[in-house]
Image (cartoon, rainbow, N blue to C red; front, side, top):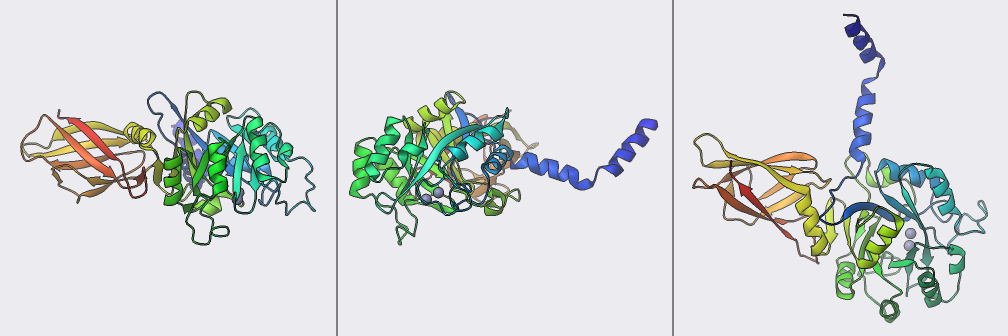
Length: 372
Ligand SMILES: [Zn+2]
Ligand SMILES: [Zn+2]
C-alpha cells in the first residue's frame, strides 16, 4: 500500500510531457540494420559552423549528431568564404574540427576533419574529408587543391552539382575540368542529395563514372528546424557500409563506393548495396490462414526507419489493400493475401517505390513465405 502511494506521488510529480519527450528523443535516433558482411554506419559528411557561414558553434553540431544517433560527422566549413571573420578571427582552418573533437569527450561519435573547397563553376564547391591539415588547402589553383587533398590521403566529393546559384537549370552536368579530376582520381564522390534537393542527373553521373553516392544535410542553421525533427522528419545522411566502426573503416568504404543515401523517406544507391539493406530491414515473422478461409495473413517486421512504399508485382491480390501498400517503420505490418488455393509456400514480389537505384528505376524485393 505504501509502495502504491509512493508510485502515485511519483506519477503526480513527473509531468506527463516528460515521458512523451523521452520517447520522442528515442524515436528521433536514426536506425538501420547492418547488411551481410558490413556494418551500416550513419554519416553526415557536410556541416557548417560559425567558422564559415553557419550559425552555430561546433559543439552544437556534435549534440545534434548524438541526438540523431549518427556514427560520424564531418565538419566542413568553407575554406575561402568567411563572412564571420571580423567577429570570429579564424587563422586556423582546422579549428572547428578541433573544437568538435574536444566537445565529444568520451561519447561515441566519430568526427572527421574536412573543408568545403568553395570555387566558382567549374569546379564549383567540393568537400575534402579525412584531412590532416586544412590550412594547406588555401591554394589559388583549384586542381592544386585537389592534389593536396590526395597528398594528405583525403577523400573528395562534388557538392550540390544541381545548385541553381551555379547551375540555373538545376541539371547536374560534368565539365571538362570535372572529367579531368575524375580521370586523375582527384574526385571520388558526388552529392546526389544536398540539403533539401535531390538530383537524378547526379545519380546518373555517379553510376556512369563510378563515383561514390553521397547525401548530406549541408546544414547552416539547426537540424531540427530545417528537417522538422522530431515531428516525423529526418536529416539526409549517407549510410556507409564499413567493415569496422572507425574513421579508417568509413574511408575505406567511401573509396570502395559502398554507400546508400537516406533522404526524405527515400533510399538512393547502387542496387548491390540498396537491395541487401531493404532485405535486412524486412522479415516475414508469421504466415497463417485465418480459419477455413483461403486468405493468408502475412506479418512483416520492419526494423528500419523507412516507411517502405511497396507496389505488388506478384499474381496475388490483397484482401485489405490495393496493389500499393506501406510497411511502417519499426513495426510489424499485416498483409492479407488471397492465395485462392491453400499453399504451403509462396513468393511475394514488390517494387520498392521509395528506393531508387538509377533515375526512374526502383529495386524489386522478393519475400519467400513458408505457411505454418
Ligand atoms: Zn557549397
Ligand atoms: Zn556547404
